Length: 159
Image (tube, rainbow, N blue to C red):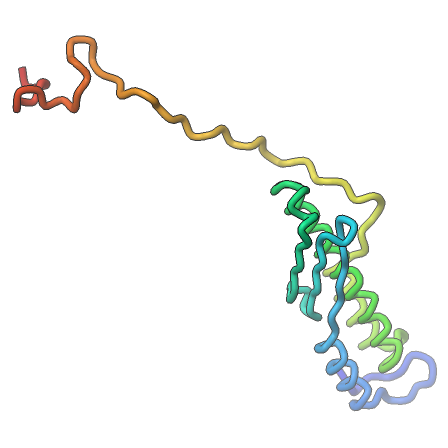
């Protein structure tokens, strides 16, 4: 609970003002990240939701699959940067040694983990689907001339 906890080191009660200040700061935090040498720029809110997406003309050269992958990578980088900003806000308000501070930090680091190792494109789970077949001619029965089945005003199937 915010405000009624004991500090880890000094035994003093955590002031409600510090917890409220932390909540206010976290609610207004934003983080941005760039990808593809600046061709993609993403900004996320404290919830991790994308609030801005800017695509440079260079991003069109990535192709649709490459652009989608780069946008997702950049979103993850921005969210990871958000977790770092929350850590700064916790340190400046309630401290990382308090129960509130640890809970807030754990929440953000679990939801938005730092990218690990070199980022590679994920392999698709399923192969791409085959294109829908198109027919250039209308199939017909061998004993019929091509048509819609209503030669001479009668249904040819009724013979």
